[in-house]
View 1 (cartoon, rainbow, N blue to C red):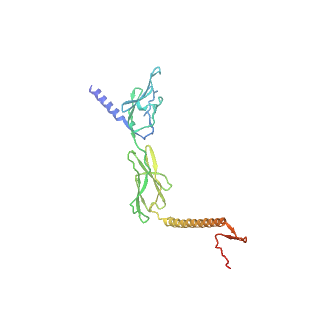
View 2: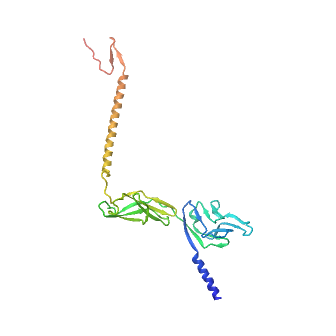
View 3: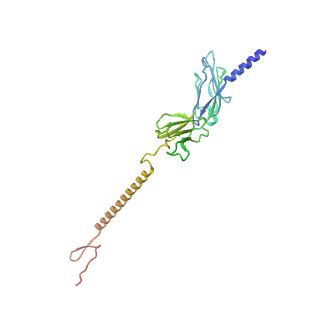
Length: 277
């Protein structure tokens, strides 16, 4: 009796050790796909998926006759957005929401599978921004630190990657230490934040340790802007003068002419000189 009890305890311990929750992540409106791990070698005759112990989907047929005993059925809020493949046991749920979080388990051919899925809702990552520390970092500095910043609250597990110039992405930490000697040929740095449901890249950031190329400072832009403003102002003045002269010429053409008794013409706008006896 003691040997049997010890064997049962050992068997229970092994089953507990084999049972594990596989973390899986989803976003609002996203899709959750769950597979059988491992898939049983024999044909499937019954599949029952549950969430937190409650029925989600089930399908059962007779092992001998093959007749369906329980047709494919979905329960509660999972109706209309869930698909169960009765050949593979794969479960696909669309339009996921935070309320769908929980532990998903499956029973196949009347056997509860050890593998369970712990479905966790997370948000998509934001677009990160590269920040430079310290603020005094300049071409006169020997080294600086770049930080890949973004609000990752509720984003779940995230990873950070960096790219130098047009090079390859390399997974690293949130911060990247750079030196003047080690990045002398690197013009820009770009960082990436990624989680299981999304990935976003920052805008390239100029290497703060590089000397500015001649003509790349803002002085050239200022001079160009002033010169452009002068050209525009001159064009406005010339245009105004042209319109004024055109209008004046039209007025002169439209002035009426009068005739004197001697059949002479004169312009009413000009003063009339009278000869006195």
